[in-house]
Image 1 (cartoon, helix red, strand yellow):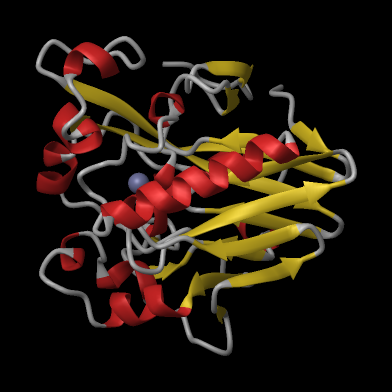
Image 2: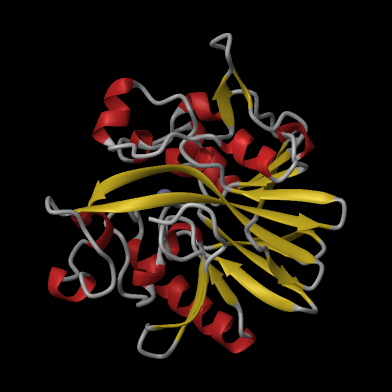
Length: 286
Ligand SMILES: [Zn+2]
């Protein structure tokens, strides 16, 4: 049984929610391969294995999920293009912990891209699309929701309408502006950068601190604030926010939790962006 990372009364679990491969250029962009390849392995045809590690936070009487993986609604063509290496099975991963998906009380979405919001809804055995966590309150930044409703030519590629069916603002969708503590010790903070309404998640208790930077820090190789992905719509905002937040995390001694990393679930960095402390939850390794 994997061992949760504990921050006082908060317990953190990482649940596999689909794995795929992307061309290395889409993750490292202008960073020379001679540099990034020292930090992250790639396939013979220059692809990177990416996990989607939904973060489950067990708090006092709450079960909070941060991001939901790729979901089970991808077409055959999409699964081929994204080289899906492991299917999404989040309800089964929750069941491994003795948790029914209806028990999830809160779902935080760092942003609306399909690899984070794809598991908000699921195709049931009867073929219907339904909310995966029907009793949960979902959280997004207001401006992210605006862009999901009216995507541009670029964001429309990754905001897929079927992932948001059944979300109703004011009912099961709570829109947040800027910074908001949604539950004791759980604070959402707008970052922008990757998408206009991208947000980070601070987890704090007397026993420790963690910062979930979503796609501003997709894996342990992206510790350098200048290493932002070409997917970022506002890359200079990413650099500025990442620099600021990584500095704050270092000052607070925070764990940095990782979403797309198949090799490591949380880490800290030294001033040279090298991993110092490492945390591996367990379960399947790459
Ligand atoms: Zn992502």
